[in-house]
Image (cartoon, rainbow over all chains, first blue to last red; front, side, top):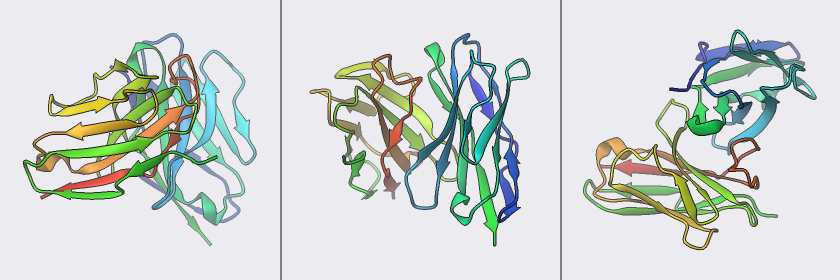
Length: 113
Length: 117
């Protein structure tokens, strides 16, 4: 079975500081993608960043970047210069092959002014 | 254009009632997904469609759950004889990707919060 583990149920960060959210996963698929989605309170889930498993280069998207360690099956999200609008639930997702789409349990990020 | 919409946003049902939840995906999106999100948990995959074809329904928890997308656009998730454990937020997402939507961004709707009394 495909699994995604987010070991930090809650995290907090001071505004303008940097925070890293952890994610580990397990899949038997050789071709898969990894995602971080953000679910703000009472708002719709949106994509933060995406990583193709076959690419060694870590994805970046403005203040968001990932540290993808394929051998360790680790996929952490770094948020730089944190803003109040970053407060949300963050989900790590593995997608691909016959094991389809699997979400982690989420990390709730609080941004302290 | 408009995003993914879902209706109703909230549904309260008495145990044993049948419910139907609607999803309007983004126009032109080939793939459509349904997820169940229990309180404080991550979404769990229920089923997905590529156009009108239901390619995977392995996540449907029981035969009381049924999903359809007859014209490859709007989709309906039906739950028969609802039970208290069916209480959750049901999320719909769509993706433009012809390869099955597994590798591309999914666009999510606001969800339908189902409460079964």
